[in-house]
Image (cartoon, rainbow, N blue to C red; front, side, top):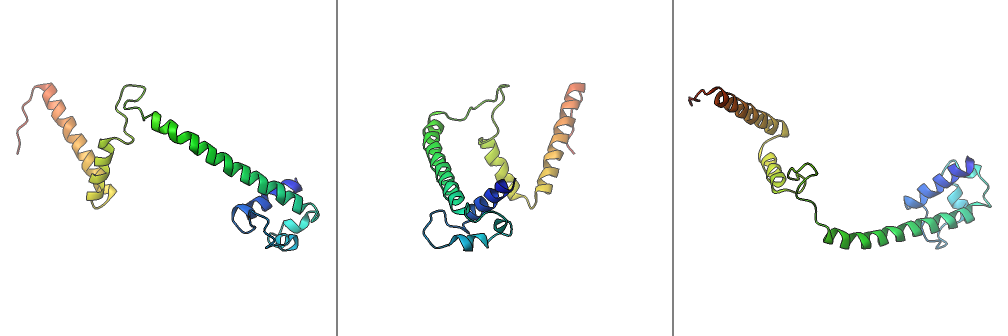
Length: 141
């Protein structure tokens, strides 16, 4: 348990840039031990080896992330987003309608005002559909 906490502290310090990713000699083991209140509780003789393993794990993860990104770019280029959902509806994300709605929202003073106007349009459409169904002619005021 203590070793896990020590690894978490060390990893956090490296990821945050407090402890350099490369062992360039700028920080001694004693300086690193003083950086976090939990680190002095652990065996200082094991810290250098732990740091070497952690640094290598971080470098490996960074390399894998770069490789994944390189593989993902051609996949994304060759597999365009679907235009329709699995239920046959037009996709909303990335559509022209989505862009237009964002422009309309920006034109309004607040999102709340825009929501009220959309709700008003929905109510109007429901009213017009109802009177059409009943066979009543709508008279504009």
